[in-house]
Image (tube, rainbow, N blue to C red; front, top):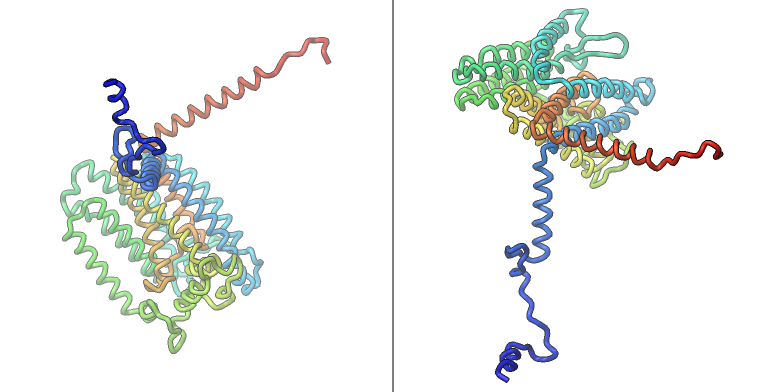
Amino acid sequence: MLRGRAGTAGARPAGTRPARRPPTTRRRGGFLSGPPGENRLRRLYEQARRTWDRPLTAYYLILGSALLITVLGLVMVYSASMIKALELSLPASYFFRKQFVAAVIGTALLLAASRMPAKLHRALAYPLLAVTVFLMVLVQIPGIGVAIGGNQNWISLGGPFMLQPSEFGKLALVLWGADLLARKQDRRLLTQWKHMLVPLVPVAFLLLGLIMLGGDMGTAILLTAILFGLLWLAGAPTRLFAGVLGFAAFVGFVLISNNANRMSRLACTGATDLGPKGECWQAVHGIYALASGGWFGSGLGASVEKWGQLPEPHTDFIFAITGEELGLAGTLSVLALFAALGYAGIRVAGRTEDPFVRYAAGGVTTWITAQAVVNIGAVLGLLPIAGVPLPLFSYGGSSLLPTMFAVGLLIAFAREDPAAKAALAMRRTVLGKGAGVRWKTMRRRVKKRPSGER
């Protein structure tokens, strides 16, 4: 009886259910967990973090975002340039075909650069710089250089093809500057300010001077950004960095204040009125194009501003046409792709132990990010119109070719990471074994027929 009473002492009354623990005290694996919704979010966060930290994340981000930007750029170049081509009595696909040819050549350069080792990239630094300086000098020779839009920065290659050597100057400065700083770091010379500045800053100022002779202020700004990016990565002291930045700002102020066209562009920053003489026409109509796009745009090819209202719809202001035709969703997609490309470049530069790879990856990331910010900021009215194309997106083969080669650099550096290299080797091994197993399995399923069987 006592045993029976003891066994029924803790029994629950009939018709009642056992008490449940609150969700906040549920145990899983010996740890207290939160509510089901919170646990689901935590698992998704951990899964996303593990995916983000995989060795090949930067590799896929660079390759995927660059290709998507280029393909979307081809579509928008065709849409934005149709009316401009017809105005010039040219076929509607004229600019698209030229951009497509440049994209094919650029893809070949990207693949070649992605397969080249870092030593070969370093070997190309000095020849590329010498050829670029030579071509930039040829631009200033009468009869050889061609002036477009008031700037003499072009060389005719015959027929409709033109070359802008200053675009290759950005790639030359990145490779040469990265090689120079890497060699000085190996010799432990970067602790002295004179070795950090000389000859990097004088050569950069030589390129800037040749560019400014042609009047291309936008490209000069980008070269200055690349120079500051390299100095920042090299660990320049704050005083030295501020001194070079102050000198560059003073020179820029003098160059802008002494040019009426540049002063008018500066005055049209954030303008909502065309001005008494229409000097802010391009800036205001760029805002009109973005504002009329709404959330999802008017539809691909349905832009109104490209019908003679917005100058340069397929080059400097192609982002405005994208906003008008694809809406806020399209512009945010472009911004997300550039953000992914910039993050992947920073990740490659931050995870390497090779100084050349760190400087080159940081320089390329600075170049592409700064150019995108300058172009998009001008379209949004936040920055003066600098006349630089949106990288990988706007029309222009001279801008597309070196940029795609630079993306190939980032891909090569991402592949050279030890963890990424091991992951790629393992994937090739697994795929090779899987193909072999399937091939053998297929052979085993084939039954030999007797000689007399038909």
